[in-house]
Length: 65
Image (cartoon, rainbow, N blue to C red; front, top):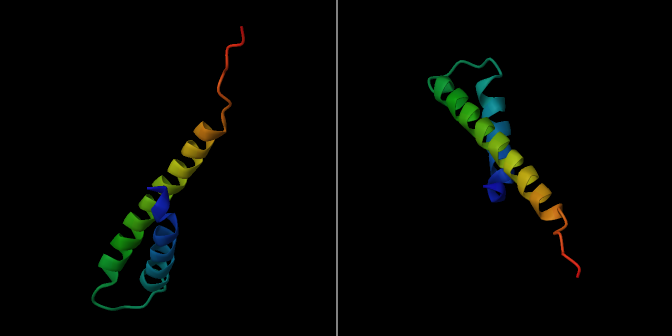
């Protein structure tokens, strides 16, 4: 999921600019829905990247005899 972070960011920005500028056109409701889902995907992707990077940073405990 973290591989798609940049794509979700681009889709979210483009659809936010198209959907929330106040312009009236037939598909504005669907563009706003796409923005909502892309924003949710972006949040999940960012959280996944943070959680995975924290797991990899933890030093493993090596028992020394």
